[in-house]
Image (cartoon, rainbow, N blue to C red):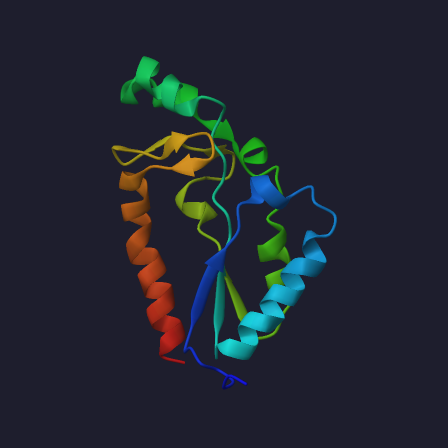
Length: 148
């Protein structure tokens, strides 16, 4: 059999648009978390990103960055799909959930254009440029966990 805690840290996530309505996903996610914790000292689950409006990429192409606010979504709409993996993970000892929502959204709005960067490449994927802005935040969290 393989050794316990083979890895110092495992980082994972799940696409909420694929699992939010699947009844058996909670049990499957709990099993997956338990298996991952047998292989790692620590586990980080990154909460899925807020979703953009339908055709957000086309909206930005038409409206441009000066009118990007027209392509934003309400926080409620962007977060309407529960991230079942992150929700389950938050109840398990030894698992940290990294929630980057505050980097996309304020109290009411999830933005499609932030600091001169297009957030979404389509309604369910973030852009390469925006993902680069998240890198320092994710790296800091990972570094912090590895120091524990």
